Length: 122
Image (spheres, one colour):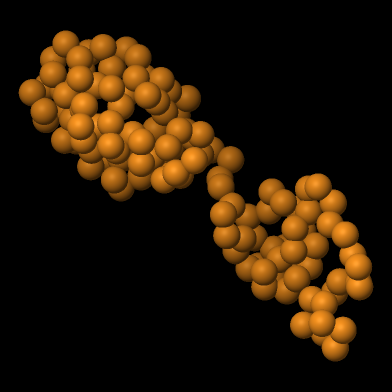
């Protein structure tokens, strides 16, 4: 903070644009899409990688846990073909379901477009 009580590098009464935010590290005005500040390198909390799925990882995990042998979690992420296969084989008698459960927990499960399920909630 400066002597004026405003973050260093900002002007009194400065208004941010719709696509701008303050860096939590140095208080520079940066793009809202930035994952890190270009000035100080501070990571921006809540930044989501561009290749992240819009599906909830928590929802997929709960669907896999409770209805996994029916492949419902695969239908949820858009993998209809493997969802049907899992439905008819009962998740290969639970083995496939267990593998999917672990893959979802570690964050390596992806949707039908190949984007990883990394966001826990919507």
